Length: 216
Image 1: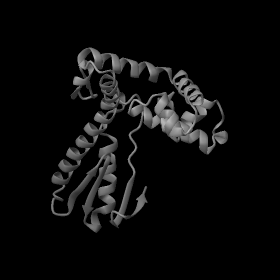
Image 2 (image 1 turned 90 degrees about the horizontal axis):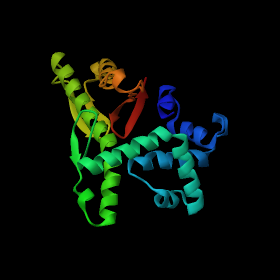
Image 3 (image 1 turned 60 degrees about the vertical axis):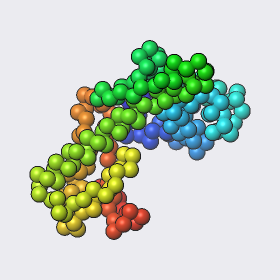
């Protein structure tokens, strides 16, 4: 169901709210979307019912009901998270799609809260770890493109911020560069590796980082 949302190009949080609350798109209100967004991002960090309660400002009963309905709706996601936790507990590490490992000594701790922390980090590691892998591969491919086109003096990488790359580009090359860089980033993984989920890249241009406008 999550794959369907991204394939359709839907707003991820509104799409989740539609399916959890079983309402049509036009009936999704701000409160529903906020709840969905909170748990969508919370999952990345192993958020439980108590944390959800605090973040949403609701009582435990309501938080528990929403939590249960979310994972009932996205049952394969629940199974995936259980699988990641079980494998990390057994092996002591997780891997990204590219095979990069992260080890968690906390699983061997006699302290329950340390083991719980290791479990939360283990859920997060393959997801954000793969994002880190993807942006590094994109950086390398863009750098190779710059060298192939002999633009080393006209294009400079300034910053990498999470999943964002900031370049300084000669004015006359901007339109050409945006098209190539966007394509390189969106094709960093073949479609068969993404279950058909598109990697969507947005481009912005401006005289400085604080004053940017979107480009198609």
